[in-house]
Image 1 (cartoon, rainbow, N blue to C red):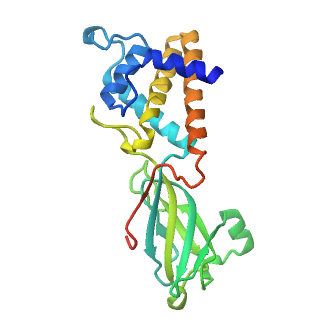
Image 2 (image 1 turned 180 degrees about the vertical axis):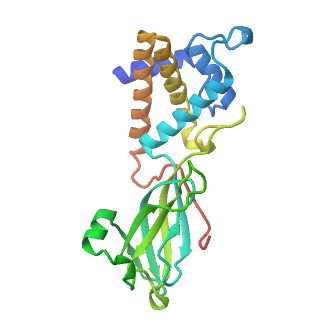
Image 3 (image 1 turned 60 degrees about the horizontal axis):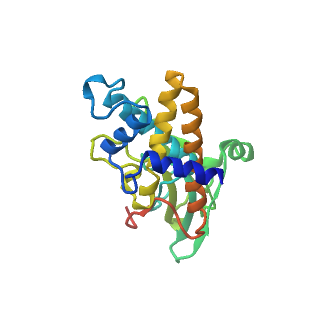
Length: 250
């Protein structure tokens, strides 16, 4: 009942937001929630740039909390190769399959660095058909703030034991840049949940202004929205949220 009441209140505040929200509409909803008149550009307390930064931070937080973005990638393993870079937007691995040259599929098990080195400090010398994988950070970051993940298949395959891997990974959504951009990479299944970003930003701004009653109100709306997303996504066991597949061999 509490959840239903909160969501009803949210609909009264944001009655028209039942479709995909652009950055412009997100900013409008936020300004209404913090009582910063969207039409009075001369008296705005918070700039559009500041709001956009908070919108992007909120999108990241929601994705990290719910793992909304899933993708796959496919490629053939090269003999005697230890490391492969994962896609630059990857956050974590959810599943890896190895398909040998005879078409037989094996679900690989993830191993952690500590366990890997405790078991054998010379693991990188092992050769054979992969049964495990290890995810680590590359030693050659693209930029100071961007260090891609890399993956290793263990044992390391040779010519006779190579094959194709299929990786399911969790990815970060693109930052919103222009006023026409839509959150969560414009995935249609999340259109009705865009209001969660408004609640999160409103909660943050009211906190900086010391409006505790508003902080409590928008915190409840935000957490209820996350729970609703989690419950609805979890109802279909065959549904992978935010899924998009790449072409085999890329």
